[in-house]
Image (cartoon, rainbow, N blue to C red):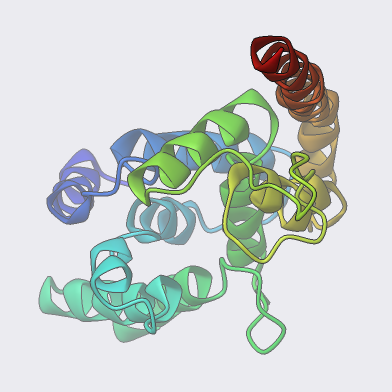
Length: 229
């Protein structure tokens, strides 16, 4: 890809990014992961791949304003329209559109091209390991959601049966299950290297907060009994 072409696409991406958890640095990491994965795949259309990586989250703003919208579907169409408006061939724009519209987990629309599978894997890698934990906590904070919720008996929930949004629920419902869903062997290998890091963080955080409630509530009960004497 020529530098002037990259610069054009990058500047459009930068004009669209507002989400702190899906910011421009997320885009660059996904791009760099994708290039690492692509190095072991063949044949890869690097122009399609780079363009799709740069533009895959350009509709986050639309989804944030209207949660009924899917940023992948809207973003794919936005990218298609942008590329056609700037003189790219319709076939190229359509390939990029497919990559973007299939980069989310979805039974009805799954990546078919190699470039789409690489983008899917690269995007999921950025939700694994320490980076994935940090991004999830940022996203939850932006949304005003907590680290955990509590069970009816007052104990801290581990997130498994939660309906209320929280970091623990996100970990049990999504982050914990990412590692067996990659399309490429390179991404699967990279994901496994990060799996224990994420699990250790979750387990340590759960142990710390749950033990605080167990011991703290008992100490509070005893203190109130003493004060009542």
